[in-house]
Length: 140
Length: 123
Ligand SMILES: Nc1ncnc2c1ncn2[C@@H]1O[C@H](COP(=O)(O)OP(=O)(O)OP(=O)(O)O)[C@@H](O)[C@H]1O
Ligand SMILES: [Mg+2]
View 1 (tube, rainbow over the protein chains, first blue to last red):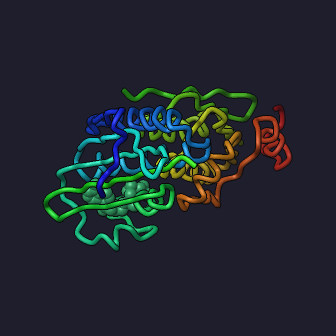
View 2: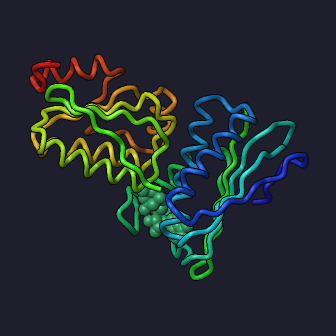
View 3: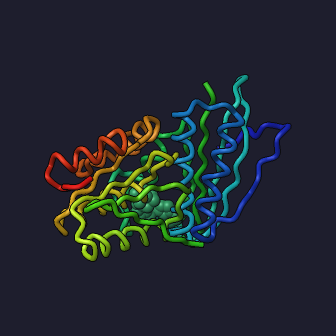
């Protein structure tokens, strides 16, 4: 996905390598979604999706980064977050996106749930290369 | 840094009020602390107040369900109180309906629920 970052607002990248970083990603996502004036429910959805994806980056990707910022498209403002790692990748995307499927001890709801919580969702992954998940939520 | 969430006792009920954004390790610590304290204090009820909690993701959701299951096994009942509407909407869309978790709108109603089910005498 080509992320339409807002020209006047640089996206910021932060590391996702420890538990605390997941908390920081949530806080950053909260600040952004307030700045772009998402409704309270949409803020909650976006932050929750970011939390799920940050944890996946940490737990399965072996750590990585989160780049997040405001986006602009068709006259609307939105918020985007890109989670990237250079871990093992996801061999079977369809399986990983299935509700309830986990290779670890999770609930298997992170990826599939995050997709439902946002407006745009893209998963780029290659076994042995890493994983990149991009999410966008538009203000209404 | 993971910290510990304080667990208060009111009569035979343990009360946990989550006030800060918890990292995953702190969530796991809380789960263990509660199990231990249910036994140590002979608690019959557990109230988890999430009034201040802005998001519940799958990890925290699972913790709530696990605490409910553990406490049931230790002869106590768990009630989650104060869930924000936006959190409830998000949880359902995420796919987590927390079926096995009893909830009440606020602390007062949660304590009343435990009283009614005979879980607490003095509170
Ligand atoms: N960044 C990643 N790198 C490698 N594998 C991943 C990554 N993200 C997800 N996966 C794989 O996809 C599966 C499904 O992820 P999902 O987040 O839906 O569930 P989960 O993390 O296992 O459980 P939950 O998020 O519900 O606690 C994971 O179990 C894991 O195998
Ligand atoms: Mg996950």
